[in-house]
Length: 120
Length: 483
Image 1 (spheres, each protein chain N blue to C red):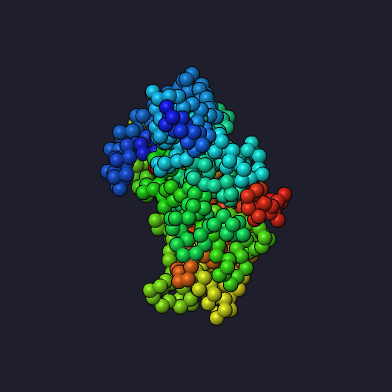
Image 2 (tube, rainbow over the protein chains, first blue to last red; image 1 turned 135 degrees about the horizontal axis):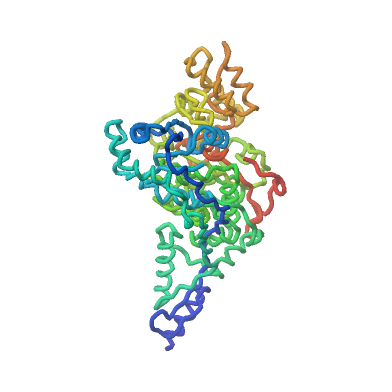
């Protein structure tokens, strides 16, 4: 018992966050610690935009950030689009990760829906 | 605009986190299998079957009506402020703290000091700043940095209260809206952060500015760098393969390299004075660097203790490396800018004392004249520019990439007899003196402009210290911080 009391004293000195140090047994020591995470302020919520329903007569924008080899993948998507939806047009765009407000506004005017690829 | 976002499976979690952080948590995403995409993208023929495999999913996500569930924000509840962790003994409880923090992605994989309320209070005794002070959000997930949260992370990193004002200044810089911590924290490249301290607080808290400046064994250098890493983990909410996508990791995996200016052996005015601060001030400078080779990475010059390399050769090698940046291509919202005049780099040059002393005493360079010499020598004569480079510089001016106050210098270079600057600004060759005698000169470089925000190199004053004579106040207190 004397040893246990000494242990308690050392524990309390070393670790002030010690809440409990009961005499043996399972989970006899409880430590209170502070959460290190920065709280993330919730951003305004936006639901996905309503879909186009079907692609007939529509224009599909394909935005790609230009990383090597991606064009080969998008060429395949574009070819399938023309094959399966002959009345659907495609329009290709290339630019940085973040296309910027001006480019986004331009794309919104030019197409009905967008496939946006970053490749990583 | 109805949009479907394409990524690869390796980046799927990252894409979902980004969508959540940008207010579209239910964004429709197609995740192409990474082991297929990266291998098969090499040609149209090989990529076509991969495209076919994901085509129907893309069509469905373009056309299938948005569900009620997708319109529901489904907000997550905030985590608790304090946590109780138990164990059969003190040692077991401490082990459980480490296990639970690691499984929650709250630490770096090395053991931490448990951030008990008392320990955090002790840490906070190092500053006059209020624990509730909001410093700002830290990318990538925009967790709010408060003085208390920084102190909690500093405790975990093993720091002492007298280091806290330095760590807080680092977080001041990380959270500055102009500093691009998002790119270095998340890039697939191994971009890294280096931290320099200029000012009398460095000596007071025992920082190493001499031989082995980036080595282990110094508690201040080690734990300040680790606290900054902890801040990125817990305030930025970064995690490998979730949103820190460095393919081979970063050199600052557990602690960002941290050093102090060796003012005692420097022949020049201090870095802080060159940045517009008072000699009595103490400042931190954080700088993005290319790690493991990206953007030139970290390079070493000089002979050290082994070879005889004159300072002139060290300087010429640095100039040659800066000039080697010709030919980069930078995507801008106005299209790609290629050739000279694009993707400008900035350099954080750490001159070792004997090279700095020789440059000053034998070759006559002051800090200012050396900066001007580097700027002149890294500029390229109009007659030596390729036509594509001239067009690129013109495009860079037109697009606004060249800052308004530098347009005149770049336009002057586009005439016979002129020289186009290799650095966006002469001051983009930043330098401090550090290391011992003998030593090596080091350059660390990265994009001059951040990818997502304007700056990749920024300084902040240290103030509010209670346990050191230095860092109590700053000449910049109450003024807008420099960057």
